[in-house]
Image (cartoon, rainbow, N blue to C red; front, side):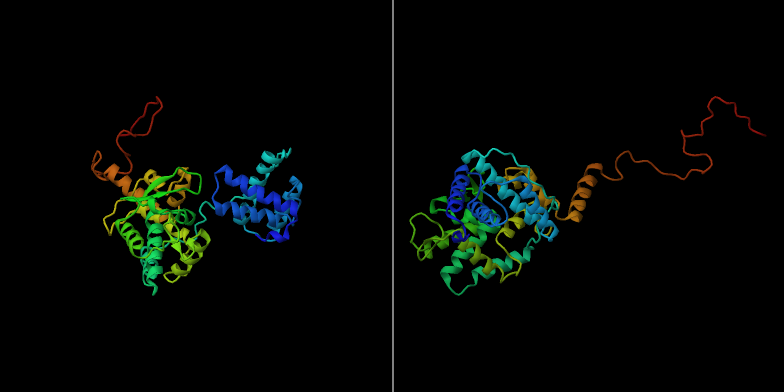
Length: 334
């Protein structure tokens, strides 16, 4: 956010808003920075210091008419929602403003890597000429594709967070901190990086550079650039999408069973099961296949109360379903 564009009073308010959001503890650093930037942008559209419901609705209506995506508008709506709560909490803002809601498709995940994509992306990190970068980036890629960590969580990892069977994660989304399982391959690469290539420029940080701990913005940009060598569509959060779908689907070829959605929810550290359920709606054909398999096993087709279906003359109807006479005497001709 370019603060030089803001008047001093608004600049101070936006800084205070970020402190409030950080103290509130439910938002990640990247979310707070994004929302602050959005409030600064909106200040050129209407008076954000004293927002009026009619001005906000007029802004969103104009954006809809100009073709703005509903998903983009929801980003602005969420930022405004926090901003108004901040004004009410810290500055006694009296009004309760009803913000418009924009319905978006149930699933907004545009791309999920295939298993082959994952192998190519990790290989791209491993094959860098600089062995320090290769060891560090290879470890980060494996943490993303095994532990499903967010980039902000990767940046906050410390040396003493590495455990025997996983890694201790300091959540950036307000969830409880937890030990997240990692594959043996991921743990081996982390330990190799620590022993041979880690720069001792920060006494605590796991991932370091020449001047200390790597920040989230650098990791996001750098890992995105490396991953795009494996697939141009790669972005770090796609690794989280792959982990979720891989665990929910399993693999018949590799003999890997599907994992119950509750276990997947725990691994992803979703506070709500609804967040995990997004991944069950990505592939309707896969859903249909899994449901059919489960129903076939339950009903054991052809084995429940087997009967022989012998043809019956059409005029008589099936036994027990003769035409009703409703108490009338039926005379048959001889």
